[in-house]
Amino acid sequence: MRSARLVTVAHGTRTGPGNLVAGQVTSAAGRLLGVPAQASYVELCVPTFAEVMARAEEATVVVPLLLSTGYHVRHDLPAAAARSAAPVTMCPPLGPHPLLAEVMARRLLQARANPGDPVVMVAAGSRDRAAAADLDRAARLLERRWGGPVTVATVSGAGPRLPQAIAHARAGVDTGAAERLAVVPYLSAVGHFSREAAAQASACGVSRVAGVLGPHPLLVELVVRRYLAAVAAVDAAA
Image 1: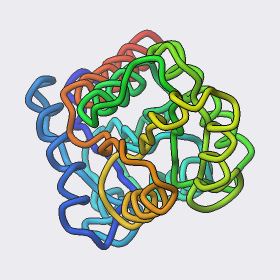
Image 2: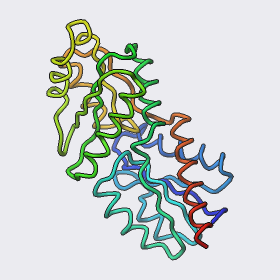
Image 3: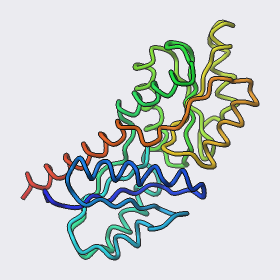
């Protein structure tokens, strides 16, 4: 498995620049690992993960560029991986993880947020209960890194919507802190969800809105770690 190729799989978006993130992260991780690397998508962009797996002729380590458990991780990806004629090792989603909390903290600083001030972390959302647990853990990791309260919001699926979460977060702090509240997307790339989150935050009077995770070097590091852990596990079991 030490020379297995790396395949990443992102959700995909109709926003072109958003789809570039997966390719940038994957290429950088492949260079660091010294292995062939291919980005793919669940939907809305090509190549799809199902197509890549159907054409697979060599051992593959799959790293989902997804931030929590959900239907895609539990159903779509395993079904597509089963189409491969060669061995496939599937890694867990990227999140939650302390490295992602670190990236969010840095994005908040870039948005002129003050460490310790209240933050609302907004995710795409899912109806999967496991996803909700993952989001809560991601928020707690950010809370520890940021040193201030973090409230979870979602754009879709289960969970409180962003205006509700912003109101709740403001109600729990003094007036000064409430005015300094910031919003950070728990999203890997720009697209529908990031635009919706920014619009809703602006409508609620929030001026400090951080950028998405993007192709940050720490995301690349996390992909590399996932790949190496998967290869080590397979080699140990051989």
